[in-house]
Length: 230
Image (cartoon, rainbow, N blue to C red; front, side):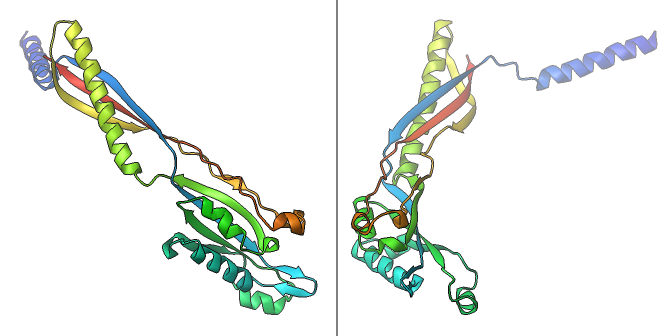
């Protein structure tokens, strides 16, 4: 009999401790969403240049690079927005000595804030030396500011939704107990802007055309919020 009483006392004590630790507050969980589309004002483009033979004479990477650097400077592109991304040979000078027919290629990255400058730059480079151009990524200069605004809007939307539902039950909305943020934004996918000068006639290649267009960035934030019901 004593053992039964001891067991009952232990169960009662455990249940009491559990009841003290359990959160018995009434709660409501809601989701708020805020979205906005923006037109990218920063587009990162890569340009690949490659040596080629003009008869028996080789047009070198150094010559093509000089043309590109001059065109970039004349277009008003900042130095920090023009970078070298890749060289096809890890040791260009050694490879050139071993194999005189070796044709090196080199890739450059340019951050455009005005895409009208793209055609301006391309028109000043030997078209036969342009291997291809690609859009690597899109961005928006004020994206952090827009993101913060949308997060706040999503949170307020969650709060207003919770208040509306709770008021419908004749209760009042209490403090936020938990807030979880989800970023569901989508950026345009990188794409190829193939510029194959070898396949073009000299007349056609004289004025390269850009098929770069503006694609929207969709910023979307979701706030999952838990509020106390008073």
